[in-house]
Image 1 (cartoon, rainbow, N blue to C red):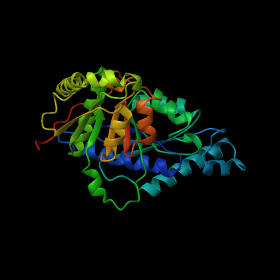
Image 2 (cartoon, helix red, strand yellow; image 1 turned 45 degrees about the vertical axis):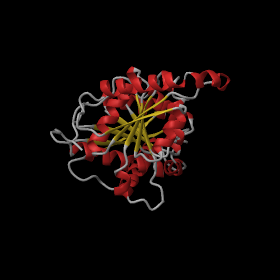
Image 3 (cartoon, one colour; image 1 turned 180 degrees about the vertical axis):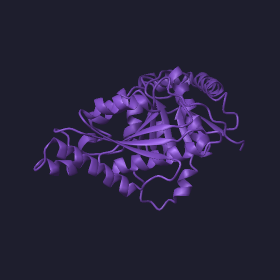
Image 4 (cartoon, one colour; image 1 turned 90 degrees about the horizontal axis):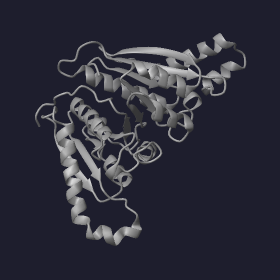
Length: 314
């Protein structure tokens, strides 16, 4: 990934897509602040509309409009969303794209030219039911780049600066993909100047074997510790200045990550894995994280790790 990051954001006028656009603009600004970063980071807001899945604002224009009118209505909705979020500060450049077509096909196709794709927790119209519907599952499952699902801010009185100090959490199981997720998470923690928490869960076995598991617990703990140590060694060999917390858990992968996500600003998972995160597929652990984690979630595919960024010693 180049240092002038290119981020694509799915926008449909919903509160969720506004949160996604804010997240993307902040992320691009973090990249621009990295020592040695070159080029201009770009954020591209993409609104996809189709006759059978119009955002509500575009749908109102459909009654009296033609194809050009619908396209203009979609562009107007995109501008209203950007106005509510606000234009980015230099040097981040904000671009606009309006397309007609199937949301999953268009978004995943356009994403091939970007380093990262960001979508909101929930949407309507072109990104209908973003955390539960088939559109969101298709986008997260088929996107060729890392996908971040951004949550709207919670109205709990927590200062933004306090939330920004929370760690980045990543789940690992020793697979190649989890190492890619680990490297991606390390970069995310480095640009934020926060600790990285690496989690390996070895529980979640069939309860009918509970007695056997108790007898083998010491061995499992040792194996889990070895897997975690090896993953950290392989995944973080080029990030020596990063503060790293290692966590092994006897819980299932979902339960362990849900618990750690409560104190995190970003949870990073691979879209599939093995071992402690058996069948880490969309629809399993990663899908449950996208649906239920208390923080923003990044789903990483193989070969998508960014160029390492060395953080200052802490």
